[in-house]
Image (tube, rainbow, N blue to C red):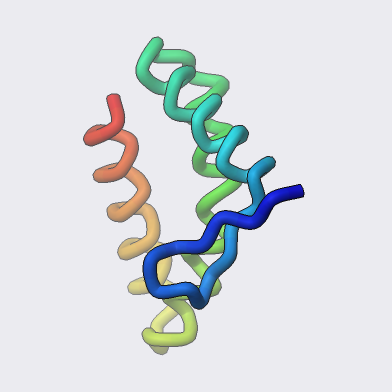
Length: 77
């Protein structure tokens, strides 16, 4: 499996993840609600962990993550 690096070279992404992400985007562009749920299921935990390292309040973390994912979904679709 090939490894593709983000520009800052700190977070390598596998080719399979890129394929999954492209599928998610295509489905979201078609308005598929199942794909939108899959997008949230995929990225909520990752973004939550990232945000939790920077914020203290669980309520604030939830709000920030939910907002970020909603903005991303709207911009994709």
